[in-house]
Image 1 (cartoon, helix red, strand yellow):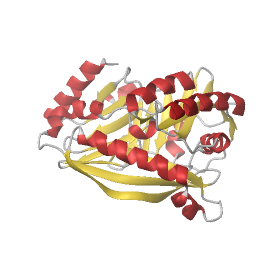
Image 2: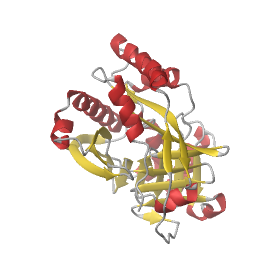
Image 3: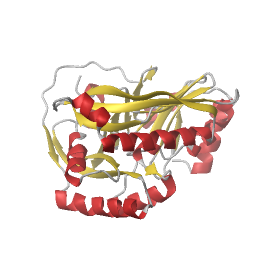
Length: 323
């Protein structure tokens, strides 16, 4: 485990020398780690991304139990009211409120990694597993792109796509995040622009199908961006889609309202191959605590949010997509 300054220095050095590496950074940016590719196996780290994997998977059909024991609605409502009060005071415009859910399952972290279907997957030692659909940033050539994912709806609802695209709460939430990410990228890049705005992606879970809206934002980095890769990543943290706006004050309210340690949940992890970078937000996250598993999930709260709807979304996001 490296201190923040050491992590930035290490990422810059590897980037400058075009040494492939994997990094992971927790939500509060207190427990960052960087590993060369040849260090992954001995540290019991598995990773699967579109352009890289260090795990050969031989999938077999499995039967599994997956039961949720979420926080009580009353407890969620207390946190929700703290957030809504902060919104009414103007301290935050959007806040991603999360909670842990106890799981009862016969699946191990190994099996969840092997059978979970997702664009980005990470298993870190025997501590947690992530199967995330959400990119953080990608860098190809000198183009940096971000793909914030904000806005969720059950696909089985009548006219779900139309309702999602026209829902005032979802529009407000997504607009705020796109504006935040555009400003974030402007700290490290020039000519930042929104390439695609509010497109729908479908995500199949073991229970149902969900619709989620995303956007694509891009900018131009200096030609030698690989020499300052550590600074670039840290300037963009925490990820806007899982914190809120404005970031600094919103994170303070998150700590007050949630009352638990997110740890690596809603942090980021990524892979640099020597020339380009891909990374993900650590959502869809299951953590081992003593003899049981905890699933951490949440959703964005705005002025238009209703407590019971947000509580349902938190529970809907407790799922695995089995392949």
